[in-house]
Amino acid sequence: MTAEPKTTTATPSPTSTVCALARRQQDVATRTQLAAAGVPPRTVSHRCRSGVWQRPLPGVVVLHSGPLTWQQRYRSALLYAGARRGAAGAGRSGAALITGVAALSAYRLRCAPAPEHVREVDVLVPEWCGVRSRGGVRVHRTKRLPRAVLLDGRLPVAPLRRAVADAVRGRGGQGVTVPGLLHEVVQTGRLAPDQLAEELRAAQLSGREDVAGVLEEVADGARSPAEGLARGVVLATDLPRPLWNPRLTLDGAFLAVPDAYWPRHGVILEVDSKRHHWAVEDWEATMARHNRLAALGFRVLHVSPKQVRDRPGEVVAALRAALTAGPHGPVTRVRVGR
Image 1 (cartoon, rainbow, N blue to C red):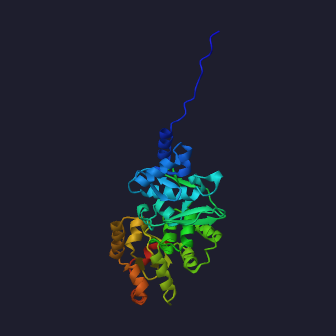
Image 2 (image 1 turned 135 degrees about the vertical axis):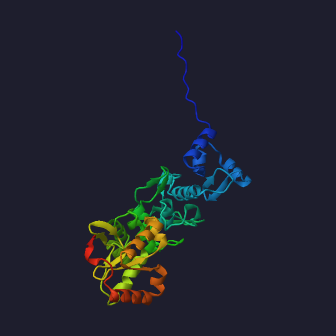
Image 3 (image 1 turned 30 degrees about the horizontal axis):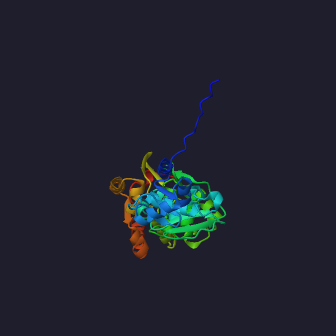
């Protein structure tokens, strides 16, 4: 009787296992993961001391000697926080999420710095997690750990609405302002005003002075922080109340959607924030529209955010003069919608 041949299962070598781990985690791993892949702790220590590898955070190893990419910085922060959940979650980046300004940069919001310029990486972990902030990583504990959103299929970040709330809780920073952030996520269609308000209420932030006013503005259709400031300036005077962001048609054809329009006077106010207009439409097209309105006879006032902020009296005086001299342009042929 012929014996059946024995079958053997090849055991992956440490080298192949580490290579697979490196591909999966962008050349970043924990010491625990490397040990599980067959790399002895003394080998890890030697390679870090000799400069072949590097240790950006406790327990985290980058498997090369060069500068870290922003993805590797984010991954290192995730592994640092996740590896300290305890034995059950050790080494799992899914145990933590990127949030706050760092997440906003990964979502590519215009108000946030580019990811490579983020100075501190905010990481969200469960409230019972014992990890501490360290080395450019700010740890935030929460009872409401949301489901991760995987950007580029690999980087776990908090859902945008939660990342926004966490950035607001930290009062922005790193060049991000709370009004600019809230206006951008609504006006670019990333979040609906009610979604934003709901998340900020859940985070107990909606009543904060620098938040409540902006929520009112975006709910009422304000398209930029500068426009919101202009609304406040106008409403504080005895000037007639304009229509904000109305859809104007002339003889039935679409005309424009100005920031503010006084229908009885033919006066238009445009707060010309070039940063905002680049986010929503071509700047040259915006100026062409303004020139077309002026050519039709409307009185178009262009003011900058700096003028509204620093010299509101001048803005009010110019509006008052224009309204007094009106009506301007073919006001009877204009119809207003929303």
